[in-house]
Amino acid sequence: MSSSHFYSSITKKIIMSLMGLFLLTFLLVHLTLNSFLLFDKNLFNEGAHFMGTNPFIQVFQWVLFAGFAIHILYGIILQIQNWVSRPKGYKKRAWMEQSPFSKYMIYTGAIIFIFLAIHLGNFFFVKMGWVGNGVPELGGKEDMGQLVIDLFSNGGYVAFYVIMFLLMGFHLDHAFQSAFQTLGLNHPTYWGFIKGLSRVYAIVVTLGFVIIPLVIYFR
Amino acid sequence: MDLKLKIWRQASPTDKGQFVDYDVHNISTDASFLEMIDILNDELIEKGERPVAFDHDCREGICGMCSLYINGHPHGPEAATTTCQLHMRKFKDGETVVIEPWRAKPFPVIKDLIVDRSAFDEIIQSGGYISVTTGGVPDGNSIPINKEHADLAMDAAACIGCGACVAACKNASAMLFVSAKVSQFALLPQGKIEAHDRVKAMVAKMDELGFGNCTNTYACEAECPKEISVANIARMNREFIKAKLG
Image 1 (spheres, rainbow over the protein chains, first blue to last red):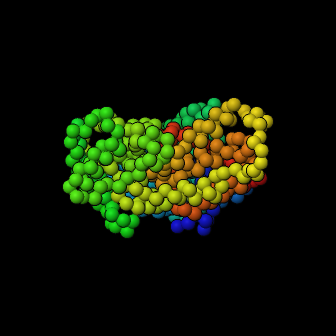
Image 2 (cartoon, each protein chain N blue to C red):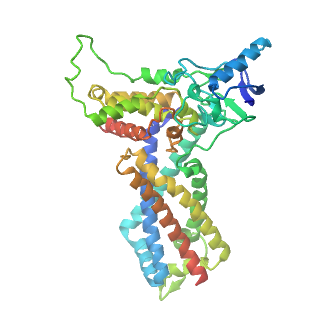
Image 3 (tube, each protein chain N blue to C red):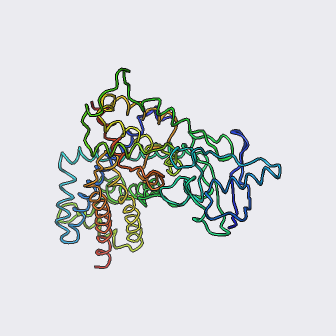
């Protein structure tokens, strides 16, 4: 497969990295909103209501879906080209990757995609009325918080959710600093900081998303 | 020392190829890896068998001809060392050593451990040069060059084009090689004039030849015998963005 059929390898990678950074930003917003559940369900519901009704967000959510689609599409194209580039592998290959999770991005990415589909089915599709019995109501208003709490009262689902986010953490650990490298933002003075920040981001986001269902389950 | 070798044997580019086991005995720990294969080849020739074909030239670590994927590493397990500068004291007595050719679609095997690396030449021909009108020799100090840039350009120019980066990369990407060649020119005033056309042409040729895409695993930097930095890849990405926007 010749990459000239699409864009150059670097252009494709730049598109991947920009979409990736966009998704990283989205995850932070999502985590912030989810964390409201730890403190006040009504606050979470207010946030969910804002996200579900604000006209800008309504338009922007389709931009977000497009971001996911482009990131996934280019990820698959790049990976197929990479597999094609080495038709015959080695009999013995040592571990050489300096960014440990870089080796498994397509696999962690595929798992995240499956999780994303299930996640949308559990929340977004229910909210849209496409599946399930609709969102519970509290005082005439949608009680999204209760929908989440109900789901997180299921131990099996909590375990699945935690494992998914641990795998996502591996994806994020490589993703953040890799995007900077691809965009050419590798400077000897700041590179150590960027790599450190990448790891901190991965740990904080993963722990954040993991703690919320655990706290709700054991509360 | 005695060693068990598993060597890739392939009679021609179209031959299927296979690993063949050899035993070598009484190898000096002071011998280089290539001298060890020389000894094996002498024995094979004496027995009337076909010697193992492998690339080599200067045997001083500067020409970029030697290759060999040794025990899972391009140029063997020692860091920042070409195969010709790798010595047998780095191996254990009785150890099994697996020796393979570089594996990448743009580097087809010609015979045994020799691969065709002319893809790199094609990349250089596409833009890895500066166009200079011949004439009198200019004064060496007539163009001021920032010391830091001169040093970085020299570091990039240390690339010997051996292909270890492609061999190491899980994607068979040539980004470290191409970025070193783009960088050594882009950093210097003489190279800046054609910088935009150069990076676009070299990246296009690299893609056309079928090298993989970089996924920033940084295996290339870890395995490069000349320790070329992946900061060059970031520089090439910057140069590419500038060229596309400029």
